[in-house]
Length: 329
View 1 (cartoon, rainbow, N blue to C red):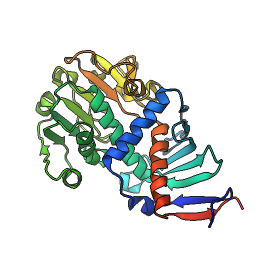
View 2: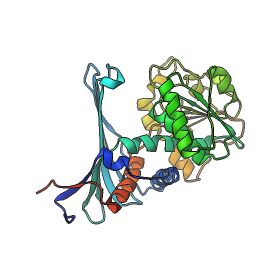
View 3: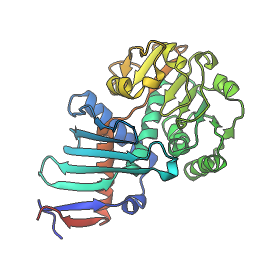
């Protein structure tokens, strides 16, 4: 079917799962999205959120425009059963992209794989920019989706890392972390640690990806001088933020909405020194001395989903994947 203004290419989970994309490609695509935003060529409005009084579900809508790719897109996310165990929850996320040059729709796709790659890519960029010179040891906390991809992305951005530590309690998750590392870096190994305090004191870079029920909570006193602590999920105590020498965030506005669990006794969060797009644009540096302890907050921005989603769409279209649906006919 010829593309026109009545058809939409729909890319399913299985369509996207078969696409081969390198970690370097992912990191470069995400970095370009941040640089374009910092240059004022993209738009990333604040997300809309809806949740019922009893908190059993949450939904988001995020609109944005990528000025480098000249595309407009909207991402939706809906999770139901927040009071249930993870296997009983329902989660759906989609991304719909339009070409802002031709005016034609590009694709509508499942956004789960895009998000699972975008987030560790952002963490890797934060690590690259916030790590002290000569950083050699990385610690990942958690073995869920983000924990499993954290180390391969860290090594992509910081190939000089020579010691990789993992704090996790689920055997299947630990096995999955090892499997992902072996798939991307077959010559590298990860050490599973039993004492989080000792591991944190040795780490130059910490990426906390654990789930909300984790007992893990690295305290500021555990961090060595020059350490960079990156929060994606859970695993860092609020003291690592409040006692940091520098605070970096992908978005200060989003941190103040989604990072309330890191607030102090008065319910306050400290100011952010710099946002990641500014750091990547090289206007300012994440750290100003090697001894500073840096806290970084990874909350994601929809422009990164849009850029990576469009890259996936390009690859899928090249391979003839997806179904053309006459949606507006």
